[in-house]
Length: 530
Ligand SMILES: [Zn+2]
Image (cartoon, rainbow, N blue to C red; front, side, top):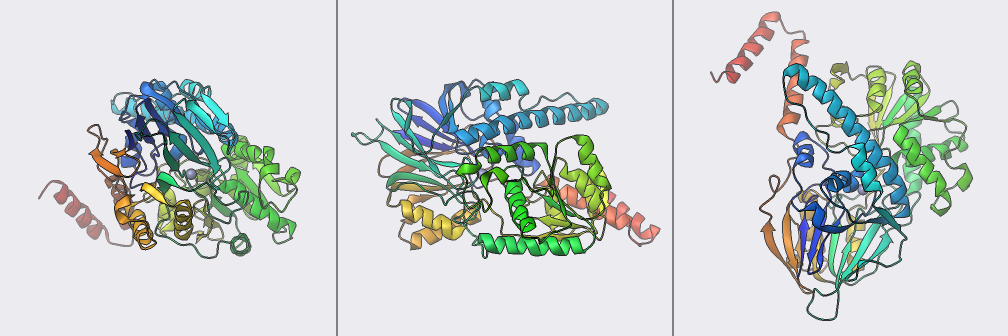
């Protein structure tokens, strides 16, 4: 009997990794990085709760790092099987895994410099460029909607998931598991896109599975006004108002897909003459490379509104590569729309652009993506007085604006529709890749729609289920589990960062020196347990 284990993205939205143990060996679906606060990131350094060398193959639903980012570590720990994904995912991985390795190596170098000064031991990077190269050598691209057999007992087929370029849901059939001639049929949704999105048609897959494993990122959220037209209109309004403030408009954006969506939407506006005097900079070497992947596959993209050969080629676009050109941007005082990564402002060139623009009242920071609690982006979103970047506290005087209608994920209604369209679900439905509140809300709605609540599972981190053709039985959490059953969205590191800023604000306020001294004494007394 097959066993399904959720080794990540259970009760959270990162670290996607599911393992199937069958009568004929084990394999994985996705192997993603844990992202967010330090508690989550620490999990990346824990041993895998399985023997990497014993996994026969890996099915990768899409290139996002929270689904693919631990693959080089997996290879380092002995995995040597094929990595199946779509052709475009394979092309994106070439950039993302190498980029990830370079970040790992430079972060480790910086940390070891610090550790040396403090007399602490050296740390190892999570993985190296050699590991990334070894992983890339295992990548085996396959076409959408074409069956393939990683082993004689397993048949897999990829379906469009409409989430990002190359994204797929994976249909998996395993023979020899049900006690009769019928194979066990599973469908892993991967991340699902919304019904209306530039570049991709809505998600598609067949129906009638024993088990559905579905993401639930927006299980408790319905978006309004996110038609392409509505979204462009909202962006146009923000950009015009931002430029009218007199300074620059800085947009933190993920390098994969979000940067290209923005660039494309802004290109449509430029064509229509809405932003005559603006120059649009895409300043992220990774986003630039990903942009070329989009250009290469332009003929296969949906809802373009421009000729494929003209995609991202407007004369007011500047795609920045060199560090020098990036630095020069800091001298630009007005009329620039700067799109840069990372999307949550925790790393990358966006931090330099924030340093140059955050403190200026005539500038605008336009947030277009989810800002995980504790990230620099979340502090900007929450309107903190000061933002800490590169060890400096910078006054936040720029106008902070937020656009909630850009998303690569299906919302609640779309998730419900996708699941209902796949029904009947015979054995069970697993809701993963979502926080507990999202999953519980979705479960209640699906119960009302007629999917028995007892068949809807919200797996915990490292929980295993035995899968018969008719029902799933939990075997509980693995003994090798790497943490609590759920991850805290806001950990003590986040609390510490907040407290630090609050102390700084108090010490720089108009309070008298006596008052300031009293506060420090009171805090010291607490620390001393008095
Ligand atoms: Zn994704």
